[in-house]
Length: 147
Image (cartoon, rainbow, N blue to C red):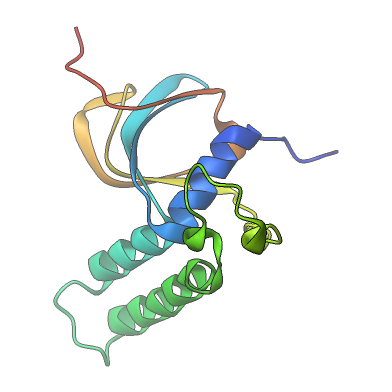
């Protein structure tokens, strides 16, 4: 059995968020629900989860140790953007110096901040993570109030 595929265009946007910290308003259609929020990178997501896990506990506690592990993972996730020359490419130019750009890291998850889900309309979701292969449709951009 092969793993389900995902939308390559959405994966590219998620890769940019992961590598460079770009954020976008995003609406995702998944089986049985719609989720909307602000797309954030894996580094920002993992760092925020570490903060929630640790809470007010000091470093030497079990929660502190788990938070530290998550922060190390966030550092690993952020390493790609720091070493890539993609950010050096000027928009709208044919820059031959940067034609051999590194391959973007593979993504499997999409991360949202301040999300809402149609299946839980009255429950704010400060941090949301979903499998990219489960997304059946998406819209990028600002959203006005719902009718």
